[in-house]
Image 1 (cartoon, helix red, strand yellow):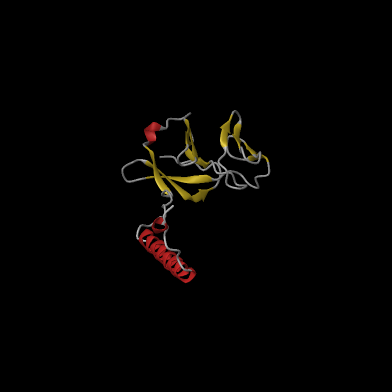
Image 2 (tube, rainbow, N blue to C red):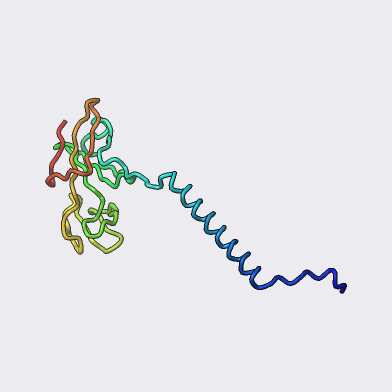
Length: 155
């Protein structure tokens, strides 16, 4: 091979200078990318704690409905309409309706159809949530307001 085709060797000081400048440039690009990323918020808001359930005539007595996107169980009886939270009181798992109540798939708690604990480790019954009526006549649920069990909304 010809001598003129061989590249000149890079001295060690020059190599270290080039490597240092490259690392500095890479760090600068990373910092700039991080600052640009801060311009767009990445916080996803939680769903509203107060939400519309529907019109009262959609829940005639005898209606039982699971609303999975809100993790609630709606019961309509002659006494009125009630909403039970499907969030287990043990560690916050979502319980599943079963043939005779609710079962927690994570830790084995079992609840009766009214949310009372039949078998632990859940320390207390499922929460009953406040139901009210909006100005337009639709039923509203406030997931932040717990009511006593067997509290029915009579509209």
